[in-house]
Amino acid sequence: NAGVTQTPKFQVLKTGQSMTLQCAQDMNHEYMSWYRQDPGMGLRLIHYSVGAGITDQGEVPNGYNVSRSTTEDFPLRLLSAAPSQTSVYFCASSYRDRFGNTEAFFGQGTRLTVV
Amino acid sequence: RKEVEQDPGPFNVPEGATVAFNCTYSNSASQSFFWYRQDCRKEPKLLMSVYSSGNEDGRFTAQLNRASQYISLLIRDSKLSDSATYLCVVNPISSGSARQLTFGSGTQLTVLP
Image 1 (tube, rainbow over the protein chains, first blue to last red):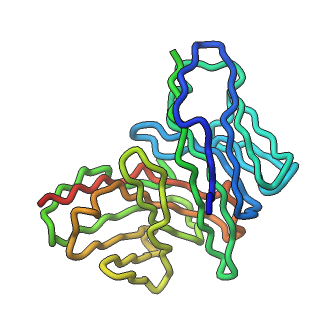
Image 2 (image 1 turned 30 degrees about the horizontal axis):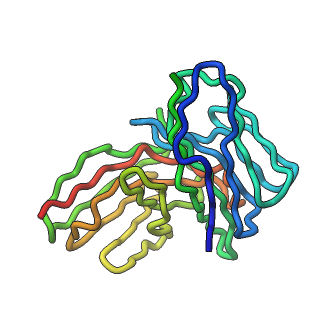
């Protein structure tokens, strides 16, 4: 009963380095998304996907890329890390039930520090 | 103006107290509403959906006022385990797209023994 699995849980990067945050879900949800959470800012949407092969930008997409080659996986790539990208990153998958309600299931988060 | 606004708190209440949180949203087209709970250094988890008629789940009651565009969460008989940050979440359309989930910054609650 894994749900949404995110790796790594912690990461320290040097400015300019690149890396990929992994996210996988086993619930066969169509919708997946990446958020970042900063103090006092709440969760802000970075990128999202409504199905395999389809991605789109959220509120704060700059500096990040995503792809969705399978329903299960939705990796987030930091192209050239900057200190402003120090944050906690959450991956989420969601579905819409027959009543029109949407519940998002979150991974455990990745705490990223860019020095 | 933020799309979803919450009083950040912190709210410090004694065990057994009743506490209420409010949340306002700016998009009048919003159709789905939720409260999520986030424990310290953990991921958010759905606490309850909020329906137009209001709904109750044990000690928790959620209310929606569409005319005034606010949502409330009432917690009765507070327990120590209720200590967490409560996130107000709004979905402007009913398509279920994850893109549309807009989160408030959260209200921090600490229940004191």
